[in-house]
Length: 498
Image (cartoon, rainbow, N blue to C red; front, side, top):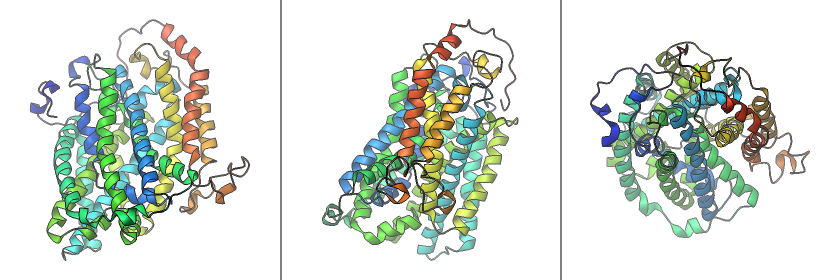
């Protein structure tokens, strides 16, 4: 970080972070809300943002519709991250520990498992994309782009991600600052080099789509951006001092995470709308396809910006996935959890890079399927946060007999019900293993799995709304009972993975 308020953390020798699920002590809290800009910008400045222009147009909508869906979906979903990040400042513990206040200490294991699956999935996707992008660039340069190249690229990218996740917070914050500067500058250069490939006449001629198609693109943007991060949003704000501005936490998280995707989306829409050939190629190789319109001399810098941007996101994911795995009940040090996730990440990347040729279909299916339960959890978490008037009792977050209880049935049942309804309102025909979804579209008069609402992905919005409104309506008494109890006495608490 470059902020002077970091109070010397930049000069501290790097070492493996020893913190896991434990609460960060006052002496180790540092920085200001402004420092949250760096990790969030660095994690979302990826060239992949350009490909979302193609993804959005793939819903059959016009440039202006896609732009509106992108702006609303990106900003709103990252605003949710900002609100969850406030919980980190108030509780100084990882996101999936703080949600124990709603679900109970062991009841929270179910949403922790879902969170772990989502973050492992994201880090796998980003690592695979970085590998494919490197191979594509080297192939265009005539240096080989076959299996051997992909293997070497995967080893290098995987090592960078795993090292960052194992080392932990301090290295990640320094790494994200470097990634922010390098990728930001090179992305601007990329845009300048390919700007002449934009043809407004072709872009403006893309026909408009239906309201259902617009909603489908909007939900896809939400799940592809903020809802993919909301379950990790407090993992970095927990290091801020307790008296940090809550508005500042929300503002800097939302701004840092949104600004790059918004700019990249606009340019990505212009590029994809200008060329049907490029639009089609992006679906198969979202990053590599973008090299086809570059001059040869910029291919190496492009590879650097593509890989660094994707690594920046994957590093945050593997850090948070390790924490989620600990919150799910695995009793190992944090760095071992991150290492285990790294092994799974590499295995999944091997499947994507070498064994499948339908990236986009599987990707949309993955995002939508896990986006539903994460949206339900997010609704519960945000409503629970709104209902609270006091900071979390940190010791009771680790006690099954404390004020937050062991298993809270109401939030769990609400999450399961919202997920069941949500899955009934989404479809994933591109991924055969998900064809069972959409079972409520017919009974509710929405045209069935082939009707006009089939790809609107209403289930994500429904799960978010049901989780939030249900908790507001039914959780007030539980929160008041918790906050009426006196503060717990300081004492040693066993924290797995600390």
